[in-house]
Image (tube, rainbow, N blue to C red; front, side):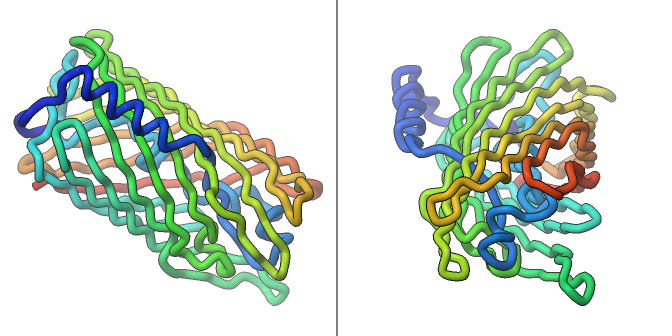
Length: 312
């Protein structure tokens, strides 16, 4: 990350802030997105209806490349307070298109806040064919605390709140307040860097659909990545393996057979230009899908991720 450290946190204060993040997350778990009607909300016929927003490509499972290219073999530097990044992060597949506007600011050295404003467009099957639904998705607000564990190791604690701003009846949002917590560990091995992440997301409220009470299910997400810099520090290439496990939801107190487990391989390239401009391209390639629902397909489509951002 770029800039110069201002008023760095002491180790005692850093660990106190880390403990505070986790104490706020006693309820943990996910991102299950609604459709039309209670039965569709709890047990959609396609796994993409649950996992249409790839969590492992969002702020939760980012590989933390930073705001500027870090030097090979060295952990990132803390940006100055007040610096912020704005960009466009797009997820494109055959059925769902997400156009996200992420804004990140350093509110204190080693402490960042990020706001994600997604616009969602998805295809929905109807009795007469297929129709397209578009609108604002669920807004994310995230806090991220960074701590150095040594000369070549750093860790990040993330707390994310998802607001039900997307229309659940149109399949654009969950209709529930969700909270997520995750930890990432970044370690250097010579010119290579590895990232490991584990996190959980949980709804904080139930959803009422067609006079039925739906308690959305928790999700566990995970990611491991290996990266290497090419062409000095400006061009980065990495391979990520990421996935999630969505537990069964409840409809009027009764468990529904809609558990979902995914594993994906994600090749990703990031290029840093002058003046804080960054370009990223990635492919989400599904390699495993297990969707527990009679008559449902255990398949998902390839997702293309294209992003551009600028740090000021």
